[in-house]
Image 1: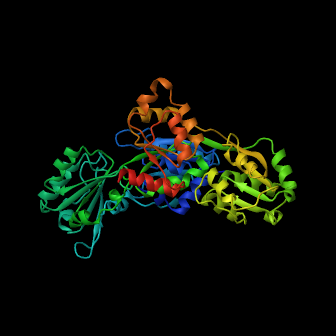
Image 2: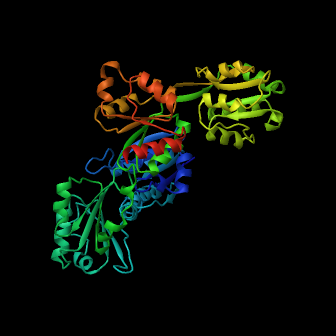
Image 3: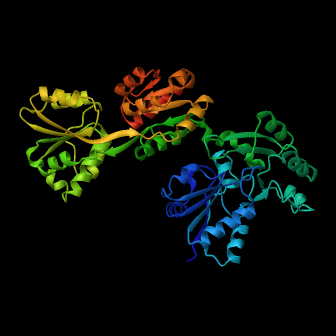
Length: 504
């Protein structure tokens, strides 16, 4: 049985700009053939067993020729696979998508087109340049910056372009910039017409150089701007000075390592990315439920003998309720049990399962839970505490001193998940990282373990360290790090606010 090919536009670089249908296609793909300009974050949305094939398409360095790409998607589809051809921008805007579809139609293979946000529109928008504006222009023209080199004559009507009075957007034209500006001026466009070049538009690496037709080439050369770039020519380019917004975000241009577990990293990544940072995801830990569930299952089966249920993390909540449901029970089994949570995130996860926390301490650490319990009579009360292996003993020790009977159960373990340590060390050595964030002591110890002792000082020489709270910060110092940022509120929002204040 033949498969099917989905020609998916990946958008201009910001992974948030892909369409929902594009995401659905990636999530169901057997094979993904992706380009250089497609965000790697989108590949993480695919199933683990999806075959990933890099097609290149970087300026001047094509891993596969277009004919080879055509043959490849035909081969994979003919073998019965659901193939996603993931292309930067929109596949039908100078993306050679038409050629790939022609190859499929010749073999009678089914396909669908999933449009993407083209960089021709998105990059100027992220640079603060509206392509149309009722006071300046009512038309916009998209032009390739380099025509097919095999053409004997140019198909571009330069005289018409120079006289439109509208906005001109050239894609992939950095190398031909002197020729483009010279042709437009020679055909009658005013030399003082505003112009702008946007490199890596919509990404944290975005750069923008402005000028006029007479100065833009020199300005670009001085700035050392290289492909990929979008060229915008027209009066709207001058609006950037009062409309730019993307580069003005507080963390723009900062590269920040996120070490949080992969399943929990999304909140921190979204917050930091929204503030302008480029997040490098190197999850230090992976949360693994306890291999032997005998103790937690017995506790759940006999939940009636407990007076309190205390959760110290979202992971503990997830594991507990997973076992509760596996045993055919739900929140009704906890009707008589009072509960406590460390932090609003833990309390919110409890709420998602229908359990409201009776105690949420003001500060999100074990000592604060102890303080919160000081107003409760726990003498002779039985407290169930499902949490991580190796957790600090403060909570059970202090509650026991207050007369409670604490049953601590290992619900899960944090294990190392540093699969890309070579890439991490390479980036640290090259000085390409500004900061590393630690959200738990386990992320600190595992991250430290992959940095060789003889190169630790060199790799962390200019690396700033941000810790989510005092316990994590203390662990970082013991491991040899110098802590630059410590959140006053021990939450993701608190950590991000502390990072903003540090660089502000």
